[in-house]
Amino acid sequence: MHIGESVRIGLSEIRMHKMRSLLTMLGVIFGIAAVIATSAIGAGAAEELNRQLSALGTNTVRVRAVELRGADALSASQRSPYGLTRADVNSLRAIIEPVTHVASLKKTTAQAFVDGKSIAAEIYGTSADLPGIVGYGLSAGRFVSDLDNREATQVCVIGDEVRRLAFPLSDPLGQTMMLAGQRYMVIGVLEPRSTGGETVVKVGNVDRNIYIPINTLFKRFGTGGDPRADKLEEIILKIGQEKYLRETAALVGRILERRHNGVKDFEIIVPEELIRQQQETGAILSNVLIFVAAISLLVGGIGIMNIMLATVTQRTREIGVRRALGATRNDILGQFIVESLIISLLGGTIGIGIGYALAYTIGGYADWIVIVPPMAVLVSNAVAGGIGFLFGLYPSMKAARLDPIEALRTE
Image: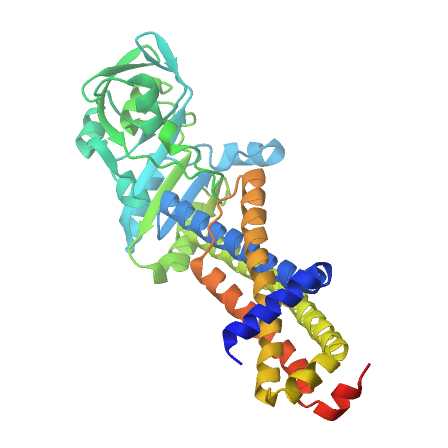
């Protein structure tokens, strides 16, 4: 018997028993749908973590100021009243050899205006090393330089969203913005960098940021040189090699704790470590979900075997007639295996469609990135086919081994 004839007979059987065939497919449908949805969400999560790492910078250590309260604040004010300072930046730059770049950040509450229109933006003072640490690209112009900082020039670099809000129809380079009532010339525009969600380390929406030289911020928005108020919010260090990341983070902590007289008014954050932990947690969760999906597929395979065994029993006389008309055992074996494969592959195809819909529904509802890996689709089809073959093999062999005489006697 040609395989085409086996497929035709198999499809005819499915059409004749639609409900039974659908119920037989359910285990495979749900299992494959779970595999596709899990793979899509897992791949999306991995992509989101890569974006976050890109936004935070690779091989970085972040030192953030911590606001102390109550008795801790009183004790800190007596032992180390200044918090993170520019002196800490110079100390870390000079002492720690693996550090290739050091940048400081301080945020101001000043408002931004262009032609009298308020622009929703966050204003940060920073240094020239920042792009080299976090990988900021420029779509136009340049970033804040060391010379800008030394001379405390009134220049700024704007994010892409600020550009669209402030200068929608014109080139922003060379134009001015009003920051706290003072004129700042736009010297650069950042490439779009929004991560599309919260990162493991809060960095906000970079596209809405405005960067000015940090010395300009202290001079124009400072507090008359009072070091207790002119504190940094964050110091970011770029480490030359990943193997020194943990060691350097620990060394930074020890140096700052000594400089601050034992006051822990800062926290050390290693983004790559946090992201790696999230990846490990996500991998464990994905493996658990895939295991659950595998159980569903196993149940689906058992369902296919049960139905195929029942089908063999119901069609015993048909098998006897076909054997009497010249069909070989291999013909009978092939026919029932093909029918099992058709049921399983149809279930797998339906499951892939449901998996797509489920993944994008969950992604849309939870605002997650969803990516369906082509390999997951191929593997799902292969698994569905394998289940159909393995669990259809025993019923098919049972059908092929029926004695034609005994089969013809069956009522």
